Length: 176
Image 1 (cartoon, rainbow, N blue to C red):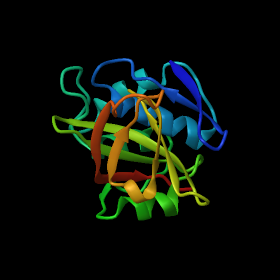
Image 2 (image 1 turned 180 degrees about the vertical axis):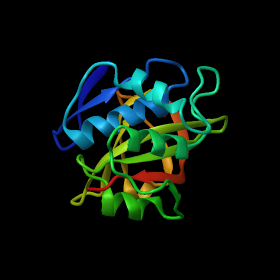
Image 3 (image 1 turned 60 degrees about the vertical axis):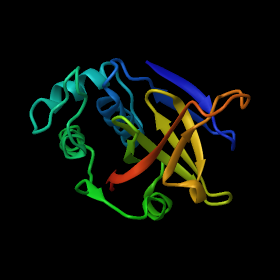
Image 4 (image 1 turned 135 degrees about the horizontal axis):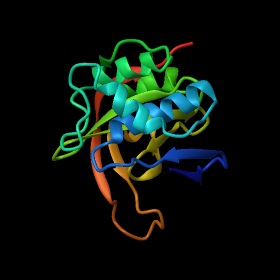
């Protein structure tokens, strides 16, 4: 299921909300495929979960996806050209250089307990805001200067942040 949000620049983004508690990886693969191909069909997350079974560290409902390398393999099987999953010290530099709606960057978030996958689809050069599609929280915008901290704000702006983590440095960069 997709929800649509407008960012601070007035652009509209569709975010696929994950279908299962631990399916952020397959949901992020599905969103990456949608933005990469500019095409959407039904059952994309389920397809990604199924394809994940063909590769090491596959998705399970109890543990989620075991590694970002698994997601890179699934993306390639889906026809999305990617570089190998890589660890980078300065995630901001990679997002600034590569993240666009037709070449999204899949990112890993580290929480205090566990991990999470999200997709960066845009970096506005004017104010250096990163636009993340988060399959649990929806649309998340963060200034590049705040990274690698990944803070999900209350959508009303009234309350304390609802989640605070950090981009771990593990990313998958798509390519044309």
